[in-house]
Image (cartoon, rainbow, N blue to C red; front, side):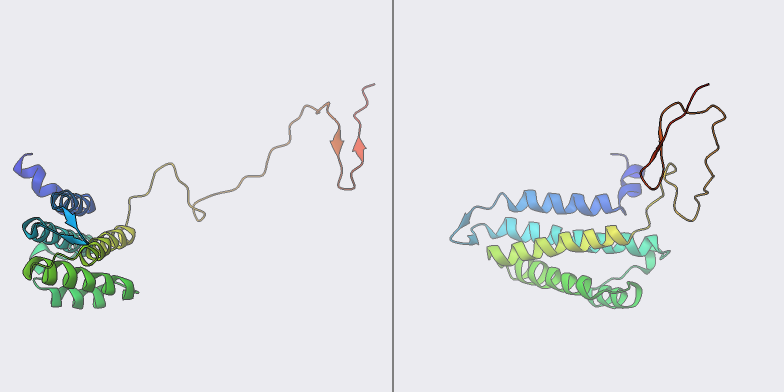
Amino acid sequence: MTKAKQTENEYTIAEAYRYLANAKETISKSPIVYGIYTDSKYVREAAGIAYLSALKALDVYFLSKGMNKADLPQSIEEYLTFVKKKIPLNGKLNSALTVVYQNLHIFAYYRGGIGLEMVKEGFDNARKVIEMMDKLMVKPTNQNFVSEAKASYKRPTKDPTPDPSPKKREGGDVLINIIR
């Protein structure tokens, strides 16, 4: 991948999904015994990547709303503040981001937590953050799709040739075209 292409793809939702997929691949290298991961190295690495996937999705959203790369949040406190200020109806997003931060970044990455359910919950919430940002993103409209506001309706034109088949009336009676 060239440097230009790498920079171009760096701020896309697809890149956030790629981070999450890489995190899942990394954590799958650690065996699970009695509900805990046995190799904390892989857990720490995967937790860090999954945490970054959620932040990447937020960055993509903020950039899509016109924010400059230099103005992107630098700490989790700034991310949470930006979410509260810039994203409408953000209760679920705020909760998901908090779980991602606590379970993946603090407990799994920094403190070496290896609990299966804790890490799973963090991964699930990272996926939720990415999906929420993906839904909020303005998607380019399909050129073949016509919205209701743009649609124009035409009256059907009457066919000048008579239809030889019987026609029904509202009352259920059948009119028969008689040929003379």
